[in-house]
Image (cartoon, rainbow over all chains, first blue to last red; front, side):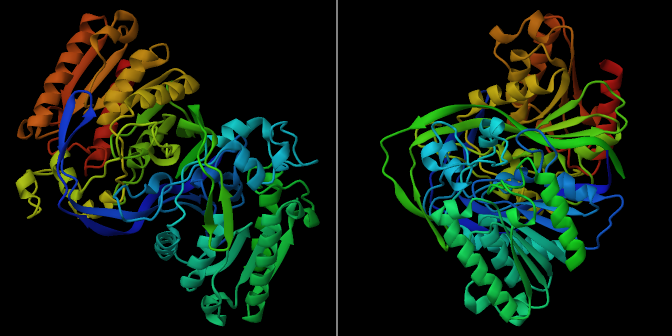
Length: 313
Length: 313
């Protein structure tokens, strides 16, 4: 049972681009409805979709804003691929208002289909790429589906998890940071919780919108703001929780990411913020993969995060 | 206040395609994380995302399944562009379990970014195209924003509505029908409510999955199944409500669509189904545009539809 004071969605941000000089074309929107399509005109692009859930009994004054990682959408916080309640559900039950973002070019935000606006082509992901990148097991063990010993991702649902994968561009960081910023300004004072590529986008949006960021949680963020954006105003006086899962040392990529995360934490502290780098095996959650919001102990991890928020904000 | 027994989401359907012989490329997923991307392998495409809301007190045994139109996503059923509760909210309050689909290539279902799988390029929509196609006013009156007299779309929110527009292909009807079919089979016996291009996709999915379709509602469907799919088995013994808004006669396109809708209704009746073609001005809702789930009288229209369902299923 979930008692909600309200739920719903909004779109925010974006910009207008103009197309001109292109020929019209006859399209068939349905088999019975031809349509003379004029590709010229003013198009709105780079908006952001936000879905929100406000519990009847809100027990924490600050909402949690959830930002997904690369090649995923806000759906990653909902029902897990093996059918358990996701972190959206968990945090609602803990009494948080929860805002779920679909970033620019993902999910219900839509992408820009106009040539020449974004560089490069969208990239898709295979199961074996996810296996390696998300630390389910060693790359060479994908064929045998032999995971890391003790890993907790529900591998029986691996194919179903793949249904969540969506294409992503690699050239859209700037519009994504602007889009998340527009969402944050609309939401107001909040705690931003970001996953993976969302950690890179979200930490940049956080320092660009420090007026509304009252706390920041990184679930294996893959990048951080440049030094010229890090100051007592942008990172000081607020708590930063930097979470990492298990098996980091098995991956050169994540070993590097861990070092970069630790370095960002030091910069936060040097500028008057508090920053804790927590490796989940050290606080009772061995077996956590990169997708720990879906791991079998996801609800225990979200409970731990909720406790951290109540202690620190 | 909304009391929910449960809510969440799932992905369903799709198929695997294989890519081979392509060179790898170095991508930057985040500014600090280079990634050697191998575009070869097995990709899952054409899956469908479904979000569901089950009310604590379900007062109708059959869930309502909502299928959006072209260039839109499931977000069109949520909070209206001017901030009122949408039909998702209205039907929940009426005691229906509600399932919202993002069809193949839209929203959280994601699109196929692999060359050569789908024909043609995705198409985007401008405000002025929507103005004409959605019957807010005459095409030539867009510049002056002079609407049809008495029209009820919240035009103050026209720019915000545009943020809901997403690109759409015109070559994906078959995978969309398969995707909706997979969703219907997972949901089980239900009433399918479709809008616009979703009416073309949904009516075809309905006759292909007649075992679970207990009622069908078209909100200005833009196409219908071919004759060889229409039989007592596929359309008989169940009610079909075919809704049209106002100002149909102002538009050649919608005048044609009305004739095709009436023709489909006759075929349904000839095959033992019940079919009512209802023009909303005739039942107390003048001013209804093509987007009548967002019009100022949207909640009154959804109440009327709920009454129809209770009377007819």
